[in-house]
Image (cartoon, rainbow over all chains, first blue to last red; front, top):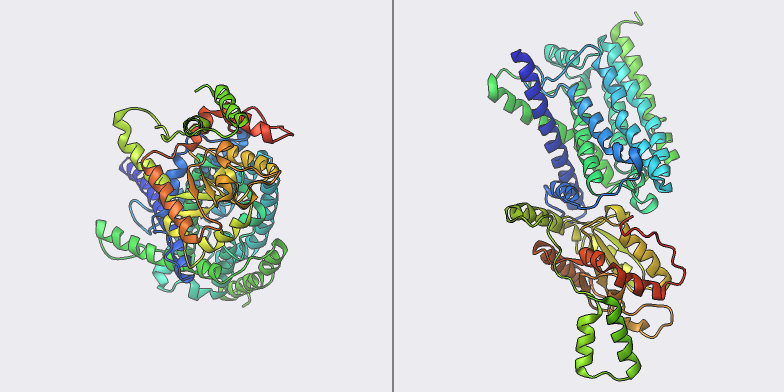
Length: 320
Length: 221
């Protein structure tokens, strides 16, 4: 009984943490970009103000049932996915609902939000939205291939599909997976550039060309809810990468609250450093067209993905 | 306020010839509806804190839809980029009217453009504000005697803040934004409410200049 209570409490705290960290990282990103352009930039809490403002809009127009449901769908997808991510290893609160084979479940679940977005944008009837959705789904096909190859390489190399197992392996051997299978890491990093949809892969929501694409008809509270979902999704992607490649967080010998606090600091540091990769790429990049983006993803990232699988099979002993 | 009566009054003034000072004053008072109160979410005194926080957020997070009608649009990139950096005030470009809070009308408006601007304005979500940019939106500027541009934007859309100049430099644009922020914080940026309350008056003026009127009846669509 106590275990269940801890799980429920942990779920609330995890959701709060994901929201706060996701929004804060979004603000930090805006600040970093501003400093790179020699500007002062908005304050780091700017995204919270934006969200508060969007939620305090007095009129909100939805175009039909799916348009009404799309932000809700995104939030549901984000929260469901979050519940299967072990945020801190072996922690009482932050371990969440680990189950056997949750990595495969996550790979499917992470596309669920995009699907809701596509349906909602489709019903709004705005041609820009439809165009944005078609471009977004094309790009999805592009970056999912190297990403799946990288994840498959990990599954083959370590013979498991549970995220908690990956954490345990890294804790036991003391070597992060980024060193055990570097090619998978390279493929996953390149794919994550597309997953974050920052420049050069930001044609989906290009403001000047597509009037912000799929979100063109969503304003006020709908946009605010989507923003929240996006922030939680950013946190999910970062924590998943840290869990799979960078050893996770929370693997320390401290007891109780101190252990959790140190684990959280470790997590924030690792996720922030990983988050800076797509942000720094975005600062120096122009924008790719859809076919250029797909050509990019199916060239080098896919090559590294295949190399990662070969490496995994070699390490695995299949070739012996 | 009886709008039809006011319009008659004003048109009478025009036909008489040179109006007296009192008549001008009266016309200025009666002419365009001036609402300076944005209205509150609810009138409970206990909600003052909520109102304050909301206004604080609104003030520091302005999504601007820059409607580049005239030459003024060239000042917007300068305002947004490194040298003047309007993003530090929480200003951000919005690509669609659904996401925007501020409609920035940069320059003269031909009657054809006015129709699109009204469409854009009515698609924005409350609370919404209009910044009129440049002297063309105040009195017509250098196009004051043109046959197909409007002279005073205030007759067709409620303007919260004017930025005078031809062209206003980025400093003045930022000054105007700061002024709008002050109005929002005090609850005085009431353009959106004003438009809703005096919709008949605005509609009549709009339909006078827009010949092919094909708008939906709904105010916020």
